[in-house]
Image (cartoon, rainbow, N blue to C red; front, side, top):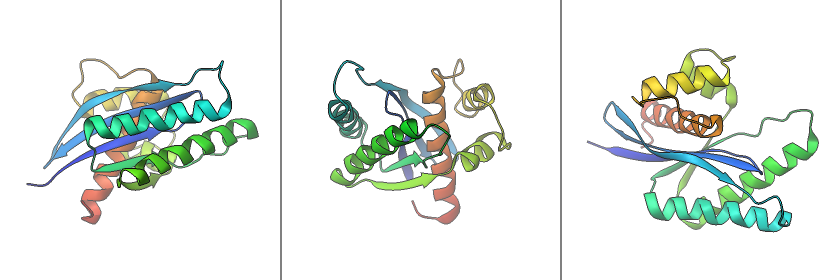
Length: 164
């Protein structure tokens, strides 16, 4: 039976959510999840370095077979979008440096996959992740729940397309 370990990333500059899901057959379980928070007192380039090192450490510690990341959702705040784009860039670089395959997923696709509703809010996602991964409580913060949802979306897409 083939198994996958997927590192899901909800990209952010100040706070980046991560979640690792292991899938074996039809069984899905959370391995770990949380957030990487960058130090607001250091320069932009050092905050990006913090993200890069943290993602490499996650890869080195948990040995995912795949990395799934949310596509950039452009909102009205250009500075936020730029920071998220830069964070995505260092995450993609960390994956490339470690030879990890990457998939990108739109927020709408993630919400549809996990909740069946493309307009689901953060609490709905947290509750469904709790149910799907049989967690004792909804994962917090919501960035970590989103990262687990991204990992599950990738797993289901990979199984459907037989790309595992």
